[in-house]
Image 1: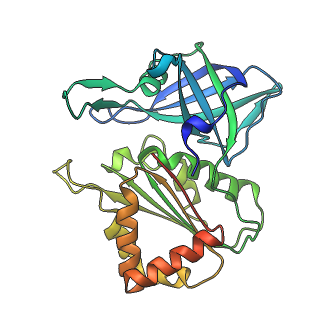
Image 2: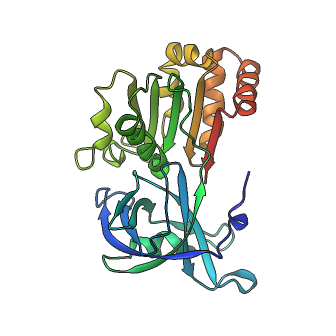
Amino acid sequence: MTHLKEYPTEIRYKAVVLHSDHLTPSDSEEVRELLLEVQDPEFTCEVNQSFGVLVHANGDFGNNYHHRLYSVADIPEVVEGKTRIKLLVKRCKYVDDVSGEIFNGICSNYLCNRVSGDEITITGPFNLAFNVPEDHDANLILIGMGTGIAPFRAFIKHIYNEIDDWKGKVRLFYGARSGLDMLYMNHKNNDLTNYYDEDTFEALQAVSPRPRWSDPINLDAVLEGKSYELKQMLNQNNTHIYVAGYKDVLEKLDQAFSNILGSEKRWNNRKAELIAGGKWAEVIY
């Protein structure tokens, strides 16, 4: 596992904000999609990569910059020699466990406040753990929570727009608080529904039970609702599992897959095989 501080920031590029779109309802957590154009023509970026955003801020131990990584949320484009990339960002705030004081997330608020024409500093690109398998018969179980949908949106568009012979199953499990918060799968931005007619693709949504918005998202129940198919997929050697989202999702996944395979021991053994074979990858924050 690589820690954020281990990612180099010496090589930097200037990027201009072309668009900043508010994707979520006004009464929900603010999530924005930013379209950036990198000014240096030498900068290139791929679907399975991320990039950093550097924000000038007074930090601990004399640090002058705050660094955060963002997955590419769409297939990068090159327009007149300049690369255009999209990112998803949720405006965040944190409560100090001791004082109870509320702090705004540095990078998230900085990015959510940007408007068209603003210039920001980025780093990278950096490789993600999510690689498209060379075997186009491979099965993919993609699990994204919140803005964790970003790398999978780009991933799925790449598979179905740029790979002609993809035959493996693609199962996307996506968790959010409500149907309106299902980025890229709601009435306002629904490009993932473009692939519903693909024989190999299925997207399954997990939401927080209404009206208690504080309830946990029922991802485990949705996974277990597909037990028969997931068990079949897990019994095949060419199945990959990729996870992106909040860190507490891992405990739910372990419980759900243990139930699907019939015991915790069976799941632990299967998960160890996936990890050893390079078929399990996670980006957790």
